[in-house]
Each structure stands twice: as structure tokens, then as C-alpha cells.
Length: 374
Image (cartoon, rainbow, N blue to C red; front, side, top):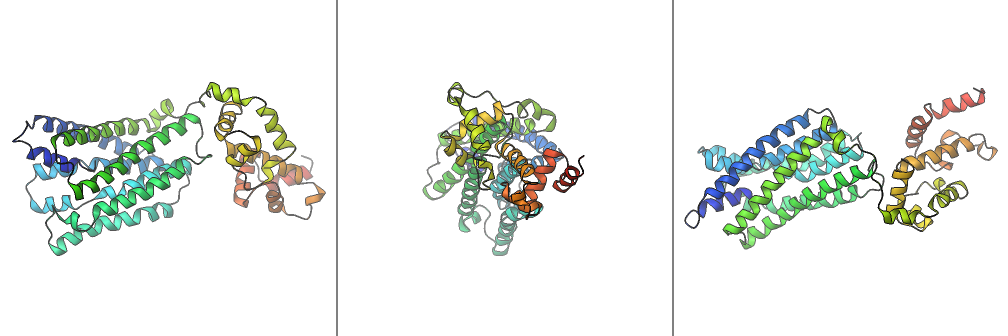
């Protein structure tokens, strides 16, 4: 993606050295797959879920990367060429990719959060054409003078780091297959964008891509990414997703099974006797340290053996603890929220939501029902 429009121009300049048939075949294949990706992007936009909506916009931005070579070589209007050459929606790549993962992990992702991540690239995209027209720069050279490659690379790098932190959150995924799918998607696409941005910077200053071989490698990888996104985009649609994501947790490796040993007994002791769930700061790493094992074994044990996730399991234990403490004289001076905090919950909202999900009624209704002997 980083070089493709430039590579097409390079390929055209190599006509005296080699046949342009290969260039035209690759360009035609890109346009063909781009049309397919455009249709899939639109289907995701109207799929009804926030994560599909964001993915749809991400795919539209990728489709747009095929626009430049088409406009430069198939349209003669200079104004359109200037607009096309200085319209850069690829600044949205990093934010859309990160927000897509956020929407999967936190389905209640707020509009304010989305807006905060999109405002900077939006302002840049609006400012560049205004800058070019105001100062009447040539469209082929304006991007070199206002550091677009540098700015885009910094934005991509920032969201690459944010995305890495997000995909390795222990409680983010519902099952092992979902975890592997979304992590793989992010690592493949984000690494492609990051490496492409870095190579674009090197090429800008060192001109090391000026060769036919580099053009073909760049173009084939670019076409491969289009094909991958077509596959991924269609398998994210609701009517296809059950076949690829919503599956039972995978069976752990033999090594993990061998490492279980007396893990069930240790699990029972640490939660029953030591009540480790009463610590509001408890996370997967702390639990692994207490059990003298690693997070992979615990994750496999929870998803495969107990059919639950880490935070669901912890919240169930904390709700049980709350129900025990509710009528304990030791806590009679506390209100419901205070007892919830003593049971390990770190916020009132989390407590109320977890209690209602597990018990089907609110904590207040549970107390009244229990007092009335119902």
C-alpha cells in the first residue's frame, strides 16, 4: 500500500526496459479485487454492529488506496488529479484499526471515544488540499514538502503500540479461537501498515525502491493484502461469523494438560480458604504467581475445563462472597456498596452489573427477598 501508486508510476517508466504487460495484469487484478472489497465494506457498514461499522470504514480506506493510480493514468482533468493526489484518507488506518479492536473488546464503545481518535486524521485530511490549493503547489510534490509520510508514520506507530496493548489484555476474548483470530488480524494488517510506512520514509529520502524487482514485490504483497481483507471482511459478516469465530474453546495443548496436575485443588484452596478474589486488584498475572504457574495454563483451564473467562469467574466468586457477607454481623455497619467493595469489587457499576447478570435481580431486591424468606 505504501508504494503502490508510486510503483505503478515506476512500472510505467520501465517500459523501455521491460514489457508493461505484467504491470497491467497486476493493476487490473487490484482493481478487480478492490471492487469485491468495496462490496464487502458496504455489507459491513450495514451489518448492524458497531464493530462491523468500523471495519467497513477501515476496508473503504483500504479500497481507496487503489484510487491514485486509476486517477493519475485514466483521467486527464488536472483539478481532479490535484484533489486525488492530496486527499489522504489513509491517515485513518491506525485509528480505525484500533477502534475496531476496541469495539470487539468493549461493545459499549462511546461516540466520544470514537470521535477523539478520529478528529486528528480528519483535520489533516481537510488541511492538506486546502494547503495545496492556497499555495498552488504541484500535486506531485506537495506531500514531500509538508511531511505527510512522517506524520502518517508517527500516527501508525502510535496506534500499533496501543493495539498491541489491547490485543494482549487477558480478559478481552471470549474463547481461544476468537483470541487467535483477532490477534492475527491486527498483527498482520498493522505490521503491514507499519513496515510500509517505514519503507515509504526510507524511499522518500534514499530512493532505494527505484527498480523493477522492487515494484513487482511491492505490488504482489499489496494484492495479497487485498485478497486477505476480502476473506476477512466477508467472514466478519453475521451470517458467516458463526463458522469462523463463535466456536467452542480449543482443546489445550498436551503440554498445558500435563501442567494442570493438582491445579483444580489449588484453585479451590486459593479461592475458598485464602479468598484471593477479595483483592480488587487481582489480575491474571497475580493469580498465576499465587498458583506458581503461567497465564496460558490458567486461561486454558478456565476456558476449556470451567467454560468461563477469567473475569466472569472472578465476578462469580465475588458475588458469592457478597451474599455471604450481606448478613454477616462483621459488615452490618456497611451499605450494599460497602459490602461489595469488601467482597472484592472495585466499582459500584461493575458490582451491580455482575450481580444482575448472575442472580437475575438487583442486590437490593436480593436482600429484600432474602429478609422476607422468599
